Structures are given as C-alpha cells and as structure tokens.
Image (cartoon, rainbow, N blue to C red; front, side, top):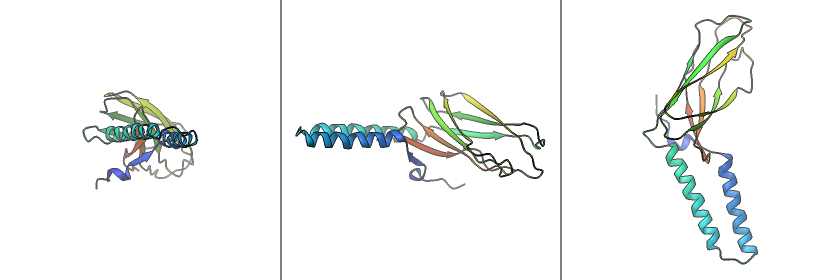
Length: 165
C-alpha cells in the first residue's frame, strides 16, 4: 500500500480556527487602542509555536496507531450482530479519536461517528451492534480515524481497518 504524504493526513480542528480568530481580534484591538503591536506579534508567535508543536506531536514517526475490525463470518438476519473495533496507540499522551465507520449500504445507518478518549499504551475495544434486514454480502469500507492530541489544534487522518466482505 502506498504511503500517504503527511499533508494529506493533516486537518485543522475547531480550536485552530478559534486561535486564529483570537489572534486577529488581538491585532485589531491593539490597532484601535494604539498600543504597541509587538504584543500581538508575541501572541501570534506563541500560537504558531503551539500549532507546530501539535503537528510535530501528531506526525512524529515513532508513534503508531492501529485499528482492526472483528466481525463474524455470517450475520443473522433481524438479530443484533456485534462488531468490535480493536484500537491501540503508542503516543505518550492520551488521544481523542473520532471514528467514522463506513458501514454496508444495506444497513442504512447514518451518523455512525463515535468520539472516544483513549489512554496511552493500552489496547482498547469498541463494540457496536448492527441489525441487518437483507440477505447477501455486506461490504464494510474503511474505518476512518481522526486522531487529535489534548491540544486539539490539528487532527491526523488514519485509515484503520481495511474494507471487508
């Protein structure tokens, strides 16, 4: 599988935009009150340092993240069937993970985004139930994992488990 460049895995969180807005408001207020602009410049440099620190933390090459899906070979129609996601990461700080599971179209479920906080160096499992109503093959897509540090300025997109039938 071809390795994705880091800039295609990088997403900005809401806190990044709030930080940028607060920097702009700081500069506008300094300009209106005729205070020295170096206060805003220091604020900008501190914000830039936080963003670079968060980006370096999320993309440091030694940190690993794995996600695998465990499902049964056959689903029982009209019954609840368990699907388990096994997650593990080696980041030194806890992670916030937004999981987006690409479910089969026969299930007709939307809004399957789950947000979890995971402590470091432990295996975690997340289980949810599916109730299929049609016969046939069920094609699961990727599990998209959006990883963010406690600062939550940037997010890293990782494809977890591979598509399965």
